[in-house]
Length: 422
Image (cartoon, rainbow, N blue to C red; front, side, top):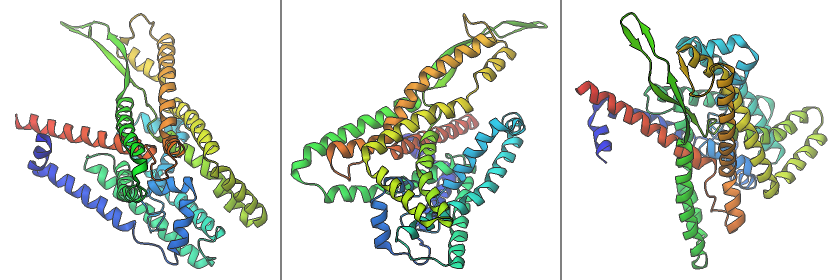
């Protein structure tokens, strides 16, 4: 409580928090402005029948279910960033620019990601609008109105990307993460209302058990998200002139959840691909497109099959993303250059193999954790039979992770100002 009061006593920090709040309010206002020609009743019915679209709607803060001008949210920008990170494996020069050129390299990397966001937003906007037309949610849209709507939603996505970067500049958390956070939190009143409407005295024990289990899940998310494996590292003593350097012991922190929520985003993107593929082939054959769409709808309406596939994809992508972003050989080389070594392990290949083995083991637990969290809503709905009780899931993981990140950044700024006061 004292820290909260201290935050608002510091003019500079108070101004930053208020500006971030205003930018998030602007995002929420934009998410309520629909594009022209929407049938709200048919749209709501369509979203309630699709778990995948419901997930995307969560990420857009309800903007997708309203078909607002920011209905794509920051999805295209996240996709562009993921593609750029994957391209660092294919193109060594890009990897060098991102990892070795420091701040200048990251600026170049981010600039390319922004350029890539525009065509991705146009493709996603067109594919989704075409999907709604094929499902009868929207009336057939002529070419020029369709082009106008695609341009509008693309501009909305780019605007959100800009708002996210403005938020990041205030150093009160990552802007894109805070936009997703605001979108998820904005859905809580609606979910609480739906839960209250469906409440009856007979299900009171179920609700009590749900609340207890929710607290346990939140504690587990915090525990795993903050969990790390500490690998001991020692530095050899070095004599330079009349001074001795090194001779200290520290540790290398390896996080249990190295990949964050990226594997879940990858899995959702892959699960959505068949639907967008069906819309793409409609240009060639509408009958084939209809058959593909019917198959996908039938397949994902089965909650058990959908949950199993979702869980497997999240686990696979957790290993995949950890492998492409965490390089044990590079860490081993850096340790060797600085005179560091893992006690009992030879520097060089032996150290990289040891680190890789440890990462492989802890990634297994991180992957299982992410997979279980991803399908928690389906598990609770199957167990309770109450649709409004959707415990946990990706939304909970993101909310907890973003809240922890904001708390750490605010505390670091408070610490800096305490030192400045001294």
